[in-house]
Length: 253
Image (cartoon, rainbow, N blue to C red; front, side, top):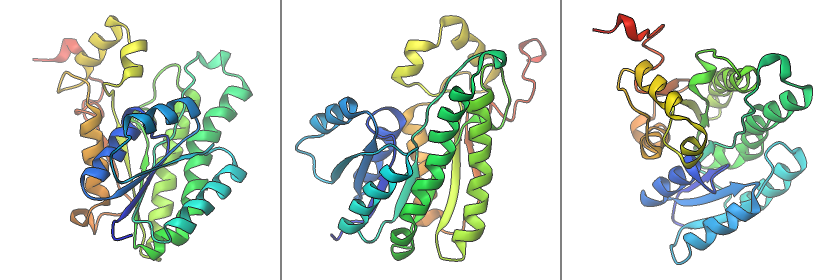
């Protein structure tokens, strides 16, 4: 193929799908991976008739699944130019209620999945002089309640990104991460109450949620030639949430 290839995990909906569409808009062939067969089928149906998309069912927490699926992808696309490790899960519970099974499920998808997919894709990324972007979270930067597994997994992803930047960089492959703050997704609309939304608006200097398009812009930039000397960095796309520190509304002017 004469197109560049972008592989995006967890991309049947939400931020992942927006990222896949952005790469496609820029002339890439977007390879969409997801474990949810129903959502993946819906995604494929919605994109029917549009060129430049491929679809694979993949459980990123499974070494066997990742090995098999990336073997198929690499056979079809021996040069990959961008890998976006977006697949992720969250279990929000008070710390005393988090079971080892909860912990293992979150670490398995978020951290192990990022490692496994990067390793499986490495040969093709080296061939394509490609770039990795790992999707972290502001929860990996700022601790908060109910997120002991999720926040820890995302913090670990950020350090994994730096390790990849150092070691993969020697092979010509860059690695960076985007840490989104609250983003206006369908899931957020369902689970964020009016009180939660007001609290976020008070804590974020831009006083709003981000959009999936804004996250996809950050991801695409880090994979583009405009970011060719950026390696091992964590870009917080969070409206200033991290910069605000304690961010108490009573201290605002």
